[in-house]
Length: 451
Image (cartoon, rainbow, N blue to C red; front, side):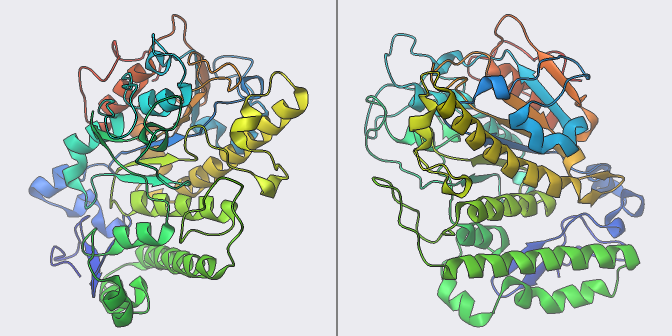
């Protein structure tokens, strides 16, 4: 166990250690600020805020997404219905615009520009191969400002294999469609799609542990490696903290077992022309749930406070056979106002929201002081395309979940006029996260009416 523990309290930074393993802990009562002194007390007066962005490709069936009423009297439309239990934790935002996803003289390529501009607010250079250029993204700006407070500055997750080379959408480099995060205008941050590799990154002593085979020989699992350390810590905890620690360790154990089980499942033949990433679960729903669980663990243990999760690469042709849809997602998004195709798009959109609702529910179930982990989160969910058939980038589907440590007034639908830039929202979230900046991409100022 980390030597930062002393007396009747332990530090928020305490970790359990084993061979090649460092496991962070959830917030325990014994870490309460009332037991701390000096500089450490000022650091831990309140639980840290977390900032995460979730991206869905190919736009949305907007009639089934947008609430009819504004304010706190709104009803959740069909696509948002899976979030009904968390309505008071939501802010649905309408009328936001991502101008840099529009052609602006560059012709076709809306999918490449949409994901590239979503968090950057910058026009992607229309160039193939390695001559790409976008802008710094909101998550990476936050990581530069505050990422040194956690073991990992940020965590980038995805469902579909990252493609960083070649030309894809209408002459744009493929990298634009496969990443949200940009550390600099010429340095995209790849998503990790393999749950096992994410788990290694979260719980190894080094994010780039060099010898995983040796590590696997030395311990059967992460929990086995830290079990002795956990027993020593358990002896110092009260009843409530012991229960919380046991629940946390049980969650990690179950997650390890699910990852191992998913790895044993027989592979599924990929859709024609697509490739399934190696090492991920054969069943798409389980892949989503595993990645959501890993994001929750990362935020809960304060391994990182900043994350992104792409539910699919922009322009994705993923087939959602688990909900009886055999056509590709991108194909259906060009619905040409056909009611049957629109209904299928709505079902895909709803499936994605169900995955997000699962993550939100897990965050809300985790106590953190007198609030919940969700209360201390700023979660943004949306797309850089409005209607997939029109390829429009105004009136985007965007919602927030979590109260941002009390800085957001949730339980409302807010409609903006005048097409304010989407980056005004990111600027406002960065401000609440503690990474205030004057300018981000095409931002023009803070977005009003969030609190």
